[in-house]
Image 1 (cartoon, rainbow, N blue to C red):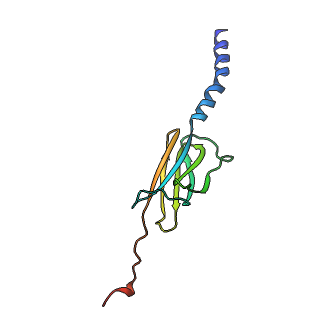
Image 2: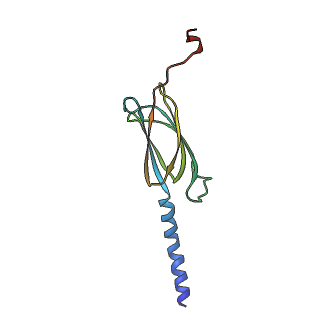
Image 3: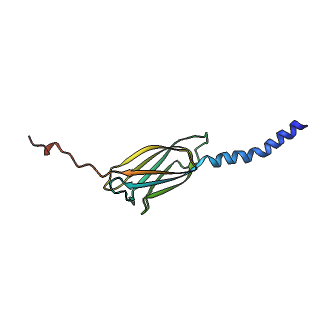
Length: 130
């Protein structure tokens, strides 16, 4: 009889434990984009975030895994809560070099800071003196 009470107690508590596990498995991502030269925020930069794979075996069929957005005047983008794991972030801004990388999301709130470089001067073989 005691064994049955323990099993019933575990069954009653199990949904609470699993909901906490899945709730803790998410992260709110903020991407901060600044100029590497001046340190100033870059507004209207295109930010593409692609979820690669997660830390938990959650089925991703109904969860959005790609986001394309632009930075605010403060140079930030906030992505709604996504599962923790690996994401690929690409940033494209006019008058700056494109930047991209893979980042590990492992905290409930995480900020990824990206610094964009100015474009390199154009090099041409024709401009060489012979």
